[in-house]
Image (cartoon, rainbow, N blue to C red; front, top):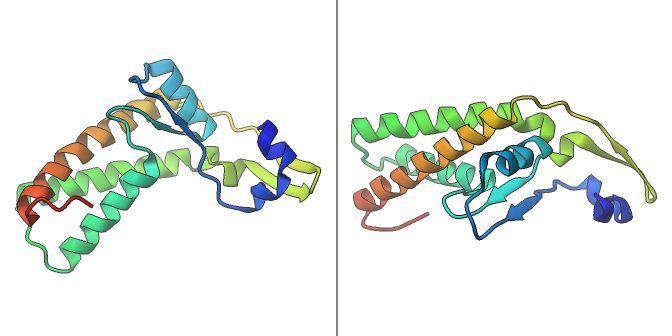
Length: 147
């Protein structure tokens, strides 16, 4: 927040705050990241933009006629539904929804009470597990080309 305050023009852009760890996140820090609009990155945790990018890539491939077994397509649809729910729930926490530029030395910060951080953290863990499974499925189906 200090860096953002010192560089207020950044609030005019779409920010993607990240926190990277070489160790697995325990639930409290992961929930804190989710509630603050920070994308956590650690072993087994991909940030939301990467999950969304994978989903868009796979959706495009399926739309272009890529053959996926019905069971795998159902898993993919469940994954997309989970991502949509998570994105909608987290939208008020993103920096673009919380910070506003007023002048080079003035920012507007909106407090967002987000009581569902632990649930969002669990959903993110589940979405990452599903993504890992889908990567394997799509790689097998397309000859090991990862998105």
